[in-house]
Image 1 (cartoon, rainbow, N blue to C red):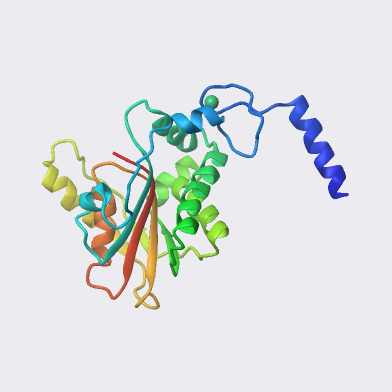
Image 2 (image 1 turned 120 degrees about the vertical axis):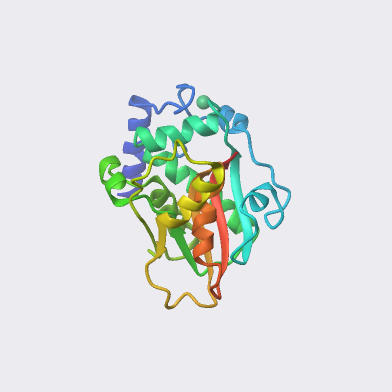
Length: 227
Ligand SMILES: [Zn+2]
């Protein structure tokens, strides 16, 4: 029966070959959504350390921040941005699974240990409109890969104020008002990995880290791309 399944799959791949999400070339390894040549040409973050790097500097090293992982560099129109947009705005969820695999590989190679994963939340109404939260897709898939449970601890509030006329400082301060810890119990002494898709200014992630600033926890951060 299993052999039959592989046969069906091989025939299906032959009849309906999968195309690379970035360049549209037919791919010979449909287990991942992009071709090897595109994989090789996405600009990587190339951090030599996950304990001391540009992302950690950007987040100001608060809340007992231990590791900062970023897979790619995020720039306007680059392949990392295009992939993230395909996931977010065209619901290409298998790209999210691919991203989770990339983060899992680093965690496994470096034998990192965490107690929980938290997906950076979207506001509920925004999630309803989009139909999903791309960060949850990445976090849930990562959870399955590395066997660490996802917990739902952070809540995001509706942002009613316009950001356009605010100074950088006001924007950062405003971000802090948007997040709230749901319940503080049972995370004391735990190492939590917070997952996000993209970190640009760092203001959103910094606001989340502030929630854990006075808590007896260790926090690490993993994102797909940073700029
Ligand atoms: Zn390609």
